[in-house]
View 1 (cartoon, rainbow, N blue to C red):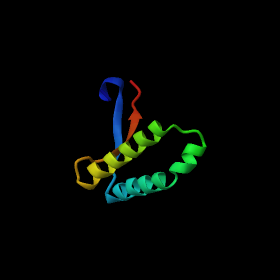
View 2 (cartoon, helix red, strand yellow):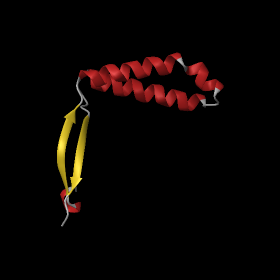
View 3 (spheres, rainbow, N blue to C red):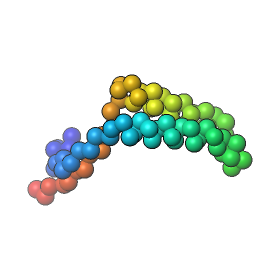
View 4 (spheres, one colour):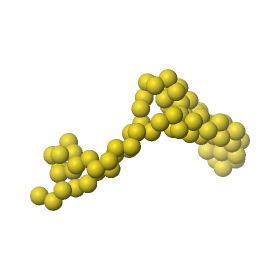
Length: 78
């Protein structure tokens, strides 16, 4: 798909265990601030969805089921 639109990969950064630790920190921080989120008017369903998402992302990353990569793309003139 990228080459179809004249993009090339310039760099690829593979997130390591640091990303797993980041997800855990986000989850713990989010959980500790739930009352504040409710006070801001965030619905309980939204909070539950984010806790589920962060929990799932953390579980998958910590078990090596998911790898997170960041790609830098450059467009080639043609």
